[in-house]
Amino acid sequence: MRLKVLAFILAIAVVVSILSLLVFSFEGGFNGRGRGMASGVPESVWLVLFIAPLLMAISALGYSLVFPELSQERSRKPTSRLVEKESALSAVLRVLENDERKVIETLSAEGGIMLQKDIRWKTGFSRVKTHRILLRLTKRGIVSAEKHYNTNKITLADWLTNETEKS
Image (cartoon, rainbow, N blue to C red):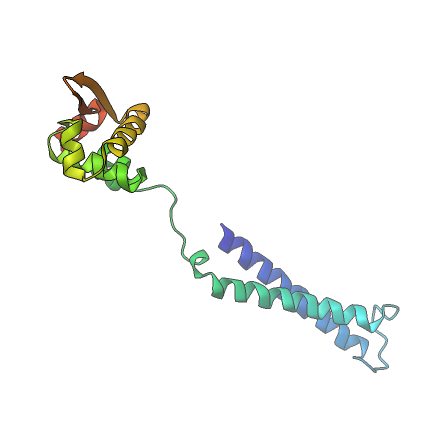
């Protein structure tokens, strides 16, 4: 869309510049004696009408060269094949922070159920850091925790494990 607007502005600027140049040349130029249809308008106005659109056209062209992604028309909607192939787990992993991603990958690799102390040992995080990460993930509904003796039993959410079983 931006590319079309940029091309439209460029085309209008070039047309206005050419028309003002034609009128200016019929007027007689800078020191000409010609008497055109706009003989009462000062020459500086015609010069501005010629140069301003020309500068706008050059700016638009330079902008499109500096930012070439405007010329590539990308669809904003993903194709249906990509949506089908992407599981809920991979979508969640994309938006998590690095520490949270490491915990979820560890949990997923172990089948979706682990003890909190085992997650701590597998990831190498401290007890407090593991607890805080799991607390954040629990609040978002990505994992659930239930008391299991001296530790917690962490389970990956059903909506994440169902997707991975279907694939």
